[in-house]
Amino acid sequence: MTRTPRPDFLVIGAPKAGTTALHAALAQHPDVFVSSPKEPKYWLCDGAPPPAWRGPGDKHSQQEWIWRDDRYFPLFAPARDDQVRGESTPFYLWSRGAHRRIAERLPDVRLVAVVRDPIDRAYSNWMHLWSDGLEPEADFETAFAAQDERVRAGWAPFWRYRDLGRYGEQLDHLYSYVAPERVLVLRYRDLVDDPRSAVDRVSRFLGIREGMVEEIPRDNARSFVAPGWRPRVVGPVVRGGARLGQFAPPQVWRRLHPPMISLLSDRREAHRPRLHTAQRSRLQEAFAADIELLASLTGQDFSDWLSGDSRGSYSERATVTSISARR
Image 1 (cartoon, rainbow, N blue to C red):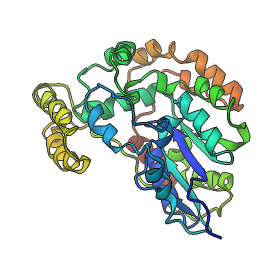
Image 2: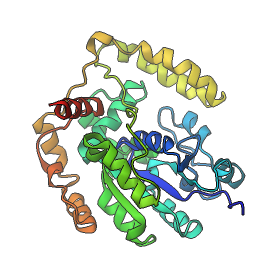
Image 3: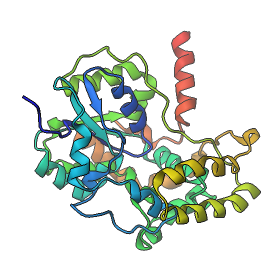
C-alpha cells in the first residue's frame, strides 16, 4: 500500500549547529529519503505566507519558504515505501507555533534537535550573515546586543543571535506538545568529534540500519571577511541587491550572489578569529540559566559551554579531530 506523503522525522535545530551536515549525511543512507529543498520551513507557517520580514535579504529569502500543503507534502512522494522520510529546518526548535502544528498534524513524527554551544552558535550565525554581506554591524557583540531592536523592526528569525541559542526554553515548550522519547537531542561536538557514531545514534533513533554512512560532509561554513574597505564598500551593494532580489525569482539571486560575495573577501585574510575569553564571559550571562534548564531536561552535562574557551569553526575542529585520530 502506498503511504501518504509526509515526513517521518524532522531535524528541527538549531541554526549553525550542524544540521546541514547531518542532513547531507542522512541523504547518503539507503534507508532515508530527505526533501529537496533541505529547509522547506513549512511548519513555521500556519497555512499562510511567511510574515513580511524586513531585515537585509529577508524578503528575498522568504520567497523560498514552502507554506502550502500542495507544495510541501508532495516533496516526500518520491520516497520508496521502505525509506523513512524527513526534512531539516533548524528554526522549528525555536518556533513555538511550529511545536503545536507539528504535534497536531504529525503525531508520530520523530524530532532531532542538534544543539551547539550557544555563544559559538551565535558567533557562527553572525559570521554567516557578515560574510554574506547582509550583516551591517562589523562587531559581533554589538550585533548581538541589537537583537531586541531588530526584532521590533521586523527582522527574520535568523537575526536572533541570542534567542536561537536558548535551547532549554525551546525544549521545555516542545515537551509540552511532544513526548520526550520522540525527541533526540544531539550535540554538535559529537557530529564533529565522532561523526559515524553520531549518525549511527540518529539511525537507531529512527529505527534504521547503522553503519551505512562512512563520512559526514562538511557543514556550510563561510570564509571570514575581515572588517575594512571591502565590506564597507561592497556590503551595501550586496544588501541593495538582496532588496532588489525580492522582485526576481530565487534562482536569479542565487546566480548573482556568489560573484558579489567574492568581492567581499580577500583570500589572504580568510583566517577566522576565535572569540576571546573576555567576550565569552560577557555573553555567558545571557545563557547560563538556560544551560542549567537544558541539562535538567536532558540529563546531559553542558557545563563546558560555560568555559572561557571558544572551540572554533567546524573546519578547525574537524581538522583537530582528524589529526588526533591518526595519532
